[in-house]
Amino acid sequence: MSSALLQSVVARRTNYNLTNKSPISQEKIQEIVRTIVKNSPTSFNVQSIRAIVVTPENHQKLWSKAAELAKAEDSPYTSKLELFSKAYGTVLFFDHLPTVEGLKKNVPDLFHSEVPLWAANSNGYAQISTWAAFHEEGLGASLQHYHPYIINASKEIGNAFPEGWTLRAQLVFGEPTKEPLPKTFLEEDTVLIY
Image (tube, rainbow, N blue to C red; front, side, top):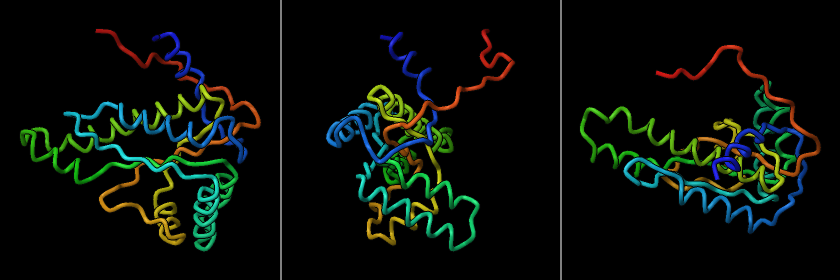
């Protein structure tokens, strides 16, 4: 099992060269995201992770509106946002803030400042697990953090996020048109053994 997991982690790469096609069904995509969000570890099992799977039609509207908003303010990110609109879909990852805040009330004061970090760790686990699972299914993806544009674009196209859901990341995905660039690594050892 760990061998397959490690292979998936090593093979997963950022890929911006995506089409508006998918080698798997929308139902399979939704099943992957539901399974990962449900089974991702969270501190004290509070289950603070939330996600929205943005379908192809709404994906295109969302990122096109985000690009339009960026262009209106002469943002250097406009072309990147336009590029994302050409992909197949997006998974939006959120923390459910009432759940995170509720956990603060149930842990000793010593750990209050750590609770948001624990939630972020759990959310990151769900993001990377979804990305790796998509890779295994033949989807390319890139993890983005264009929160202000996505939040405002979502409101403008009439898809405001549920109350208490705080956006953490956007996983843009689609069928890759070419292999991503090879990953480079630091020369130094980044893991110490004590």
